[in-house]
Image 1 (cartoon, rainbow, N blue to C red):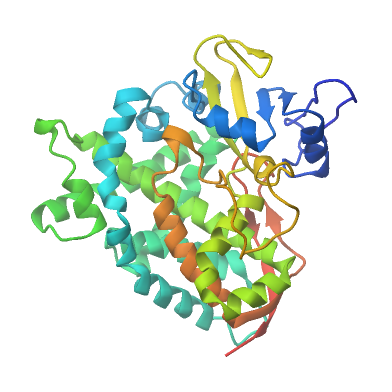
Image 2 (tube, rainbow, N blue to C red; image 1 turned 60 degrees about the vertical axis):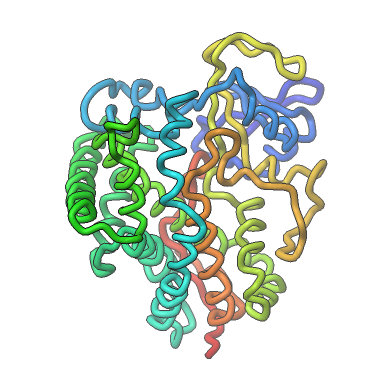
Amino acid sequence: MPAFTAGATPVLDVADPSFSITSAAVHAAREQSWYATTPYGIAVLRYDEMSRLLKHPKLRQGSVAWPAHNGVTSGPFARWWASWILNKEGAEHHRLRRLMNPAFSPKLIGGLVPRFQALATELIDGYAKKDECEFVKEFAEPYAARVIAIMLGLPEEEWPIIARESTTIGLAMGVTLREDLPKIEGALARLYDYCDELIADRRANPSGDFVTALVNASRVEDGRLNDDELRDGMVLLIFGGFDTTRNQLALAMQTFSQNLDQWALLADRPDLGGKAVEEVMRVNPTVRWVTREALEDFTFEGLDLAAGTTVHLYSESAGTDPRVFPAGFDITADRKPHYGFGGGAHHCLGHFVARSDMSEALPLLARRMRDIRLLPGSEWLPDSGNTGPVTLPIGFTPAP
């Protein structure tokens, strides 16, 4: 676990398997200093400093070198990773973002809300007569995957393919990337095939949907997306949209199980669904840290940062910083923005989709599953980077 000495800069041993980014020890380090040192660079612990560093012109997105750090410098996965809009900077980043933004318009996504509501109701109906469920398997995973299918115009019964391939690609976020590379690249190839079929169909049969909006941004002759950028972006959206929504919904259940008064309030006030999402992501985000890298030497708040230094910005620590947020969990409160979707130029492109589908699901879950409680047998990803439960048994009182 983290260790530090009074009067010195805190040191967090994030390489320790027992390390927890949301631990009391990390919060104690936050009270000592705005940053800590780690084996991977520095960790930013407070809200104000995180807010400023997310927008700092001398920092770039820090995850671009992850494959190379693991000895993966070529091949399909390395090329796809380098293509991510997340890993682009400057004019190239702005070009890709500008072209892809229309597919994520509130009007287009808002038209899918009735589908999200019907999907959530169907899944809850599948287990609601019992007094318990395995939440990841019975709700979070199929909901996240089927939302992707709805957006892409795929048959919803194919959701296990989306879930399986996205989960396999998610192995790339772990330290076993190199050993898992054949499986990862196999899943990547299958998702490419999926996307190629979708692109060909929408070019032949355009409609007013999400994929058509992306295809319409892909006329390379006038500076738009080329074919590789289009398919690379679509695969990223499938993977990213599934993984984060699944994890964040399950983390919401964990948080509300500790705040049953707020769960009951949400059941009575479905209009608070949007604020519930924001409050959960403030205190229990699946994206535990955002990574940046120093482009050149500079000094920030008295700390000299050398070019190449990795800067991890701890979103949960910033979101619960007592200098900014009073203690407690309150879905009616007005708060400063959280950083569960990152921030600055690299703010999550799909944030409106995630906000929409989760804000519809949570009130329906609260209305149908009263007095939720976590049961024994849960399994969890490590509490660092991106996290969430692998399995989450939940007990509840069924409601009509």
